[in-house]
Length: 570
Ligand code: C2O
Ligand code: CU
Image (tube, rainbow, N blue to C red; front, side, top):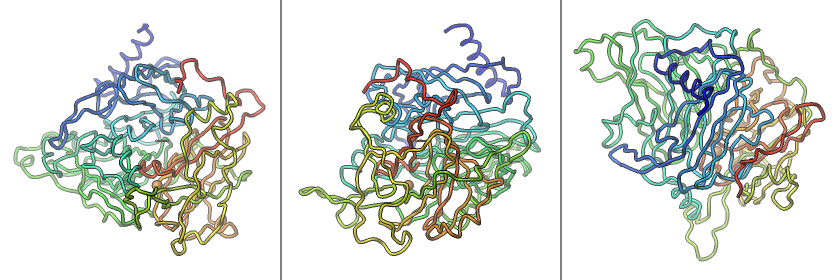
């Protein structure tokens, strides 16, 4: 470790230990070094002890801190048997696509005994993002927060909180998550649901044998705290609330918002939010709780995960009362959820301006569907009607190649992918009408070509192909403006008139309404291969994903640089 590196580590440790939150004193052109050792850790929850894959033995993994503009260098060393990659979810990776991390899209996996150093800058983000594994279902245990402070000299757009707490929502399986995915793909049925949801890795007391596994935090009466919320769950949208306390959202997906006070937060997997909470209640103890939010009648674990907020200076009598439980909407209250998502607006201030593309060069409409596919003869399949579950975008169910698409593109290796992912559904139909009689998708490894600098508009359209649902769609390499949403089939002659081109939310993951659509826009100024997928991991396993290939531009700093020398080999 050189001295710069140890200084940075010292600062991080120092900031953590004195609870200092907004580090305004860091040296110019900061580099933040992290060492991520992928290793086995023995972790016990709900009376079940298992060996899971971790970073540095921690579960959840270490927090990465940066100030906007910093360079972040993370050496990832794989000391386990499974292939691993790490993705920096929401980080734009401007001209650093090789550091993005999705397996077989921008890199081959890091194999046992190998290492790969990610090197990127954190630009045009502030707030909370997260990192996670990006291969199979390993992100169930491999995830941690990324905390980004504004560029030095820029004021926070809200009063400085007393203290901040990362609150990472996750899912715990007693079994081996890689095996659960394999079993589901083999049988074609729905994968096993998780055994518990978690807050910072702890389920809280509402599961069998879980009373000891509780995350706790302390509030001082009268102070305001920031919760840095991450939905790191694999397969579940979640509702989150705190008993008797309201939540003021000031940031989502790494961009500040107009303050929005709500009783309950809705977070899809892949979404993050900074919320302010004022300790304005009586002394005592309060639960914070998360439970499933569902848009389709699918199986789910109904029990909430909880953590306990305790007011300092509470009396013994106050502490011996059971904590107060929050009132949360019903899990299927999609009216609450859709209004929630529609209410978020970008801050769009002088210090934190946004730039919504006002015109469009590339007009895209992608259907997002569940499908069913044939059961191989001689096999017993567990999907509906004895078929296998599948999923698709524009009726193409994505097949992962055996080397990464970006390497194949960069080195001109043929036969890995084709550049003909359609701009529009290949066979238009009444997307939200009656269910289709033949919901078979086509398999393929296709990318959609975007010329550098295009203003892209993409409408994501739900379909009733096999079942209507809401899907949190995540784009790599960019954040996008969520300019419009609606129910039914998108109508290009009427719906654009309803778009918000002034202060739409700027996100990296958006859930469209069930039986509806959402329209997003972004400027394609980052060359490379960028994955886009449903952030419900089960749906990605079934093929609900594709990639964009953004070409190089002609100007300076508009070309994808060559891959780093240690980029893993397949
Ligand atoms: Cu959070 Cu492609 O991932
Ligand atoms: Cu989905």
